[in-house]
Image (cartoon, rainbow, N blue to C red):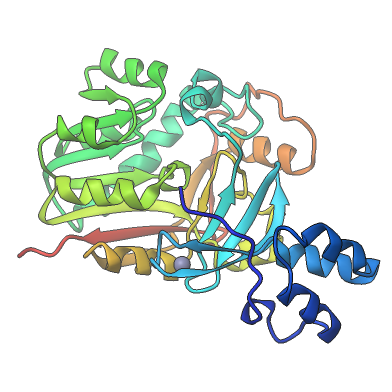
Length: 334
Ligand SMILES: [Zn+2]
């Protein structure tokens, strides 16, 4: 955990702040906080409060100890953005991934989960077949590890060309994989589990990095499992995209505490460079999305509690909101 502290340096207040407020902010500290707030006018109070919520963190993407700007609250989490590279972070209280990613998550029992993951296998597998084709442009064959492989749909497509294995936190999903003959380990991608695996040529994290408690540490461990010349393929949202910036707290991927990190192109580049990886490719691909997931997400955005939808599981639509990116990172061959 990084140390948090209230941000009260003069620089962090920016050039737009009211002059009278600056003096108060500069002298603010934990002991005098209550008194300082009490003396502020109501008009200034909101501005003041949002600034106090800015804080300093060591950014896990760019590695800088930088001001993290408070943007808004969503689902009880503060959403902050690194002023250096644009990485977004959700600050959660006591979120436990192990108790969260259960079968409920994949079966429509959670408003922020999947509508019906297994029911949409056909569409997902067609989509994943395209991803395999894409990956083969960078690495045609070899060993492949899927981190967060869910029910193994991607692995089944990939095993036509690669020697595959996977890691999955949700026990039910991992068990489903093993029953279908896949080599899948249950647990977090930590040192213990990764230590049991050999080295590999391709590592994929498909819509997974934003869920990890500590993505930089995980990627660093994965780099150690990667042979020189090997690649890491990541798909995740693009926090710098037009849609994300316009929609703010209402962005379809702004779903803490499920999503904890919001990468921009710059933050992805910064993290890669600091881990000795080269960004070989970055794009915003089109995706065939199950109609059921589209209506599930639209219902959720309209504020209603989404219900499980039996129809439209077999229908998919090509969608591109240009707010999700696909990145290929290469470990240099020595
Ligand atoms: Zn940063």
